[in-house]
Length: 333
Image (cartoon, rainbow, N blue to C red; front, side, top):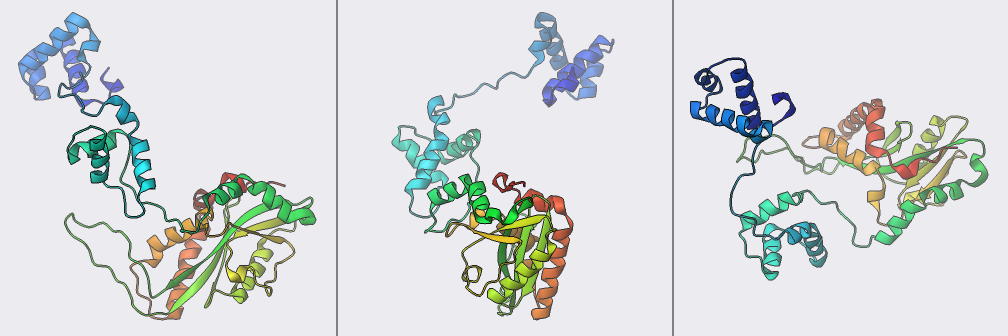
């Protein structure tokens, strides 16, 4: 029976009962479990009076929760409302406590934290959103993505397999970033951060359906770099494949000098919507593991670091699909 529970106290009681049933003395059982003989006797008595159910862990007595059950259930809605009301900053425990006090619940800050955890509300890092972003346009784009992609392709992909690729650029340079690391509690480790201005740009594309990747490193983010990237990506596609390349509205993506190969079609994201592009997660993954807390001696060192990191990422197709797969991106033939 002790194999069916994860509660340590219940396991001790079941073990004690099993040893007593095998003929061991109460004193011996108590010594093996490092408990008193009286405790073993009480467990045995409870079992004889009511069976195995009496050995289960009982709810601990104590003062009832001051927060009514109805308000506990609506606590997530209260936190979301506070987030919407604030024009800046962040919702902290003191803000939740003040809101509860306005509803007649007098409590300490420690109690607020306990209730937040019980309501499955965690202290997590928020995601950024541009002030000019249109949530309605973003939702509509995700809803009709398949229709937009097929309309953009038209008759160019008749009889071919249509693959969705996501594309973006990232700047990597001497003005790097610092990231989290393991360190003893109470300390704040110092990390390397350059102040020079040398940098390079990586144009990257991923296909979540196949786990394929393609990238090119350029000194500048401009139309020339985008043309080079499109040319390399076009050669990567099979003869019976057509690629829908989802990208943002950067000027070099819409330039009149941009040359789009015959087996590629560009599909633009809504304005100010980087969160709709899964390549942003690729950059985050690469920065955290390869491009943070680093010193680059010159441009060639930057390019070498970019190529090394991208080649490692490119080899693991499962990771590519895991980071970048979106349900709306499965178009088929």
